[in-house]
Image (cartoon, rainbow, N blue to C red):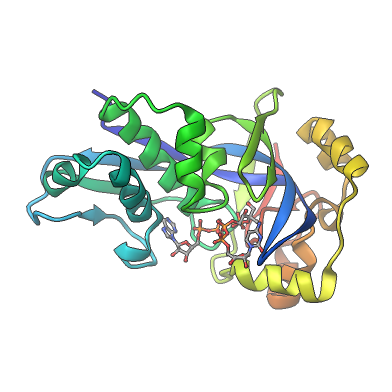
Length: 256
Ligand SMILES: C[C@@](CO)(OP(=O)(O)O)[C@H](O)COP(=O)(O)OP(=O)(O)OC[C@H]1O[C@@H](n2ccc(N)nc2=O)[C@H](O)[C@@H]1O
Ligand SMILES: Nc1ncnc2c1ncn2[C@@H]1O[C@H](COP(=O)(O)OP(=O)(O)O)[C@@H](O)[C@H]1O
């Protein structure tokens, strides 16, 4: 019986905005899993609290944790997990930095759903798990599908596998800069707003990740880079030649 799972980080090879949807923005993006950066989530049978017990080095309260939110969503479909998680802990070995544009919270929620689906023999299809996951965070559906590389559109709910050779990605996260996604989108909307055309979007979505990075500058690849730089000017110090910016930051990455 599988009792643990790797919860990978992602980077956005490119991230363009295609429009507004209420308080959110529609994205056009290539997501790639980072195979050498992951948390490990395990179910361990030594919970003596008789209540939901999440163990790990998190920067937020359990009630705000994406894994707890995923547990609450899944419990609506499968009430028996409530009793199970009074006896079992959820233990997380945390390696992915938070507020880093690496999708750690979303990845953890998705990994929990994928592991629970197997552990409890639920046999939910990926599409159903992705719909459950989308209620927790925009990037959760991508991680549910477990693709190495995918085109992600909408507000993260449309995920299409992109077949390409596996990429070896190096990530650098400036420790002292914690990027707040909401604030960066607000900057984008107020001062940097632009939309990618359907034609430009298709061109990027069809290109291999390495070709995209050879073609675009850091500013061109990620529409949130300049709004992030406005909010956190120190980011500039880390923007070395050949490095790109992931999500709403603060991580930079390059393909080795
Ligand atoms: C833009 C991405 C790309 O991967 O950035 P990172 O979080 O990885 O940096 C993600 O889709 C982010 O997803 P996630 O981090 O789940 O965003 P949320 O917490 O749901 O959103 C925080 C806030 O950012 C804004 N927001 C978020 C996503 C989106 N597509 N449009 C938005 O305008 C909204 O104001 C929202 O209230
Ligand atoms: N399991 C989790 N792991 C990491 N961060 C989490 C988790 N659950 C909730 N969060 C919260 O999510 C926010 C940052 O999300 P995260 O996914 O780590 O970064 P980013 O959105 O930059 O990719 C923070 O407020 C963090 O405390």
